[in-house]
Structures are given as C-alpha cells and as structure tokens.
Image (cartoon, rainbow over all chains, first blue to last red; front, side, top):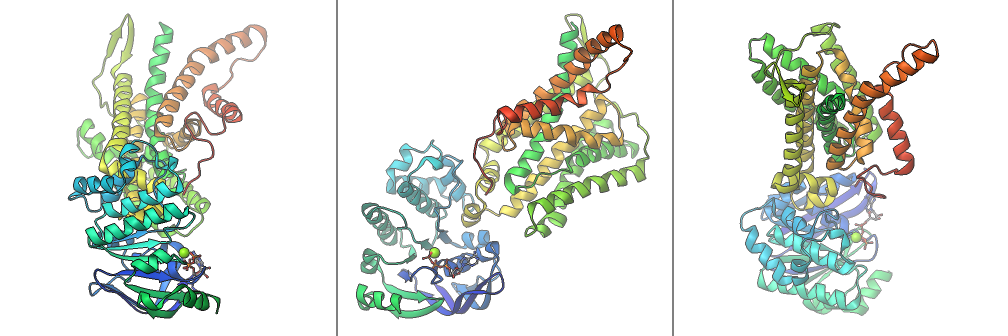
Length: 237
Length: 304
Ligand SMILES: Nc1ncnc2c1ncn2[C@@H]1O[C@H](COP(=O)(O)OP(=O)(O)OP(=O)(O)O)[C@@H](O)[C@H]1O
Ligand SMILES: [Mg+2]
C-alpha cells in the first residue's frame, strides 16, 4: 500500500534526518514505527503526508508511493484527499473553533458521507458529542488526542499515520487511545502506522515493527522478535 | 437636528471604514500579513468604476464591475507577489504591500492625472426626509450597503463551509494542511474578498466625496480601526469602524466649530485644521494604553 524506497530526508538543505530508509506498509497492516528521540520517525511520516516543504524540509533522494502512485511533490491537501491522514505531533487542531467545527473542517476535503462519519466519531468518542459546542482549546491533553484522531477519521482515510499519540498522556489514557486505534483498525479496516518510542501495548497489536535510529532502519522484524529487551539494546547502541 | 445629521454622516463613513478594515483583518488572520496597501485597493476600486463608466457602462454596472476587477487584482497580488514570498519575513512582506500602494498611486496618477474628478452618480439623487432632516440617498445607500455587506460577510465567514475553511486555515495552518485544506488557496480567497470589499469601499467613498488620489490614504484610517477592533476580530472592526466614523463626524461637526469659535473669541487663532484626522489616532493611543488587545481582541493570542 505504502512504499518508501531508499528515502533520504533533509531539513534546511543540510540536516540529514532520514538516510536511505526502506519502509513498506502492507494493506490492512498495523505497523509500529519505533525509535528514540530524534530518530527520524516524525520526519518520515511528514514526508509521506507531504508536509516537509512547510518546514524547510525536502525529500533529497528515494521514492515514496501510495498504491503505486508517487507522492513526491504532491501538496499535503492532495495527499489527504487520496486517503492518507496524518495525526501530527502536538495535537494539531483548531483551538479557536468549536469541536463540531473542528470535525466539520476535517471533512471538507471529502464531504461525501460526512454525516455518517460524524455519527461514527461520536460513537467512538461520546464525550465529543456532549462537548461539541465548546472550543477545542478547552479540552485536556487526552481529550485533544481523541479529537485529532476523530478529525483524521472524518477524512475517511485508508492509511492512518499516528505520530506519538501517547506523548504526555496518563497510562490509562494511553490504553484508551490504543483501544480506539485497535478498534478502528479492525472495524473500519484502516491501515495504521503508529510512531512511538516504546509502548508495550503497541507491540502486542502490531503486525510489523520498524525501529529507526539516527535516521536509519536498524531493525525490521515481526512483533514477536521485538521484545522490550532487544529494543532497549538497539536504543542504547 | 444637527446631531442626527452628523450621526448619519458618521454611520455612513464609519460603515465604509468597517468594510475596508474587515478586509485587512481577513488577510491578517490567515497569513499574519498586515496589508498596508489596502488604501491602494480602495483607490483602484473607485478609479476602476470611473473608467468603466467612461467606457460606456451604467454607473451601477461599473460599480459592480469594479468590485469584480478588484477581486481579481487581489487574487493576482497573492498569486504573483505574496506566494513567492512565503519564506520571507512577515515584515518584508508588509513592506512589499506598502510598495504596491505606491505603485497603484503612480499608475492612477499616470492614467487619470492628479486632479479631483467628479464621480458618476450611482444612487438616485435626492434625499430622504427624517423629521425635517434631509439625508441624501448617497449617505443612506453607503451606510446600508456597507452594513448589510459587512454583516453578510460575517455570516458567510461563520456559517458556510468556505468560511469554515477560512477560519480553519487562519486558526492553524499545519492542522488545516493535514486535513486537506489548501491553505495558500484560502489565502488567495482572502485577498480576493478583501480587495473586493476595499474596491466597494472606494466606490462608496467616492460617491460621498469625490474621486482623487487621496482615497489611497484611507488605509491610514483603517489601521486605527483594526487596532481598536483587536486586529483579529471581524466583528471588532465593524464596531470600531462605526465608532471611528462617528468620532470623525462629531469632531468635524461639533468639536472643531466649537473650538474654533472659542479660539476666535479669545485669541487670534482662526482655525484648528483637520482635527478629525488627528482624533482617531489619539483615541487609539489612549485606548491601547488601557486595553492593549483592542476592544474585541483576546489577550495573549498569537498567530500560528
Ligand atoms: N523542522 C526541523 N528543522 C530542522 N531539523 C529538524 C526539524 N525537525 C526535526 N529535525 C531534526 O531531524 C531529526 C529527526 O527528527 P524527528 O522529529 O523526525 O525525530 P523523532 O523520531 O520524531 O523524535 P521524537 O521521538 O523526539 O519525536 C532530529 O535530529 C531533529 O533535530
Ligand atoms: Mg517525533
């Protein structure tokens, strides 16, 4: 479904964040993209979603394609319309707009069937229905994480890219978020990539594990081989 | 009696100021750029309408045509100039908008000359009689048109999908991109709408006074309006526009005559000059001391 070949990614023309990475996501998969701080996980996801040029970044080499179609040089809005949703770091949403408006805005690129999808999002996250007239800026960190996942669902993605959804959340909240991800993966047959540093729960759900370190893939295994211990060793090396 | 007359003049010019200021705020919200050239678009709108009547269009059609032309000029400004400056510092972009103002003035000067031109009559001649006070249709039409359009635009911005895209792009451009909103197209739309509003404002101001290059300095009045309104609030600029229009009218109609007659009686000073052009700035200065975020602005909000 998603195929990145020998991808090198740079910021400001000189900072090499990702260096010759191969990264493949099969349809229906749930891929864990692991790695320590600065490994290049976010950069790789941003490259897929076409967001790099907006941060002075670029794809310096390699190819990225989705269903056989090259994503290089495409505008993020067009990539979103193809059915790729990126839930970025920092819970990016429209804090000055109401929750209902956030969800509506997230459906404008693919307005058909938006009403059904809104019901579905409210079914996944009932508190969003209750709070829908409130500004998104009033939500807590965990609630915001749910909102941005809900916003991604409004775009009816076939490939969902989640960048460190657990960051800064309490352990129970992390469980809730991963419950939702698992449910979406099963019920909506969305293909998912989750970037994280370490989340044991993610390793249990994943169908495939990539480990990045300093911009390179240092490990690519089925989840069974990716136990905590091995990961620790890779991270520390 | 006199008060009512002054108030009408104040509402008429004030609502035109609001129209022009709303355009500036719209662009600022989604791109962080303050368009110092807005006065240039105001002036272009008026000259475009005049030129179209010279080409044989009826004054009403010419006014509508001028608004459309200005929408195109605004969109082109964004596409040809600002889109190429995405990586430039915001201050540099603002300087460029100031450069555009100077350019537009030079173009109009070259084509139409420096003299005042009698502007074609767009609205029926005559006046309405309100309790013995005669208010010309020009004033009524300018006030009604700008107020209705301002409110219609605010409703559009708040309640339509296109308005939602504008607000989303203005709120957080990264999030907007990620959900498939083409942010730079939204900025073009903002420029088109803003310039169209400015063009209409220019046409209306020209019907109230006359057509000349000084229309381009209207931007100078629009800035106190947006600062007073809080820079990011469209409703704020509407209210502040009306306030400033009233203030100008009352300064011109009451304060200045009173001051001058006082001075004439007690000193050898005969005139205090155009006080109405000074008072807005004094008000803004005083206002900012008390409420730095403007009337409707929120404290501590930053652009993203
Ligand atoms: N906007 C940017 N400009 C310049 N360099 C950047 C930028 N964003 C990231 N980098 C650099 O690129 C490298 C990879 O960063 P990236 O954010 O992709 O790491 P990450 O794996 O997501 O880390 P984390 O787990 O901390 O989020 C780092 O060295 C970082 O300093
Ligand atoms: Mg990251």
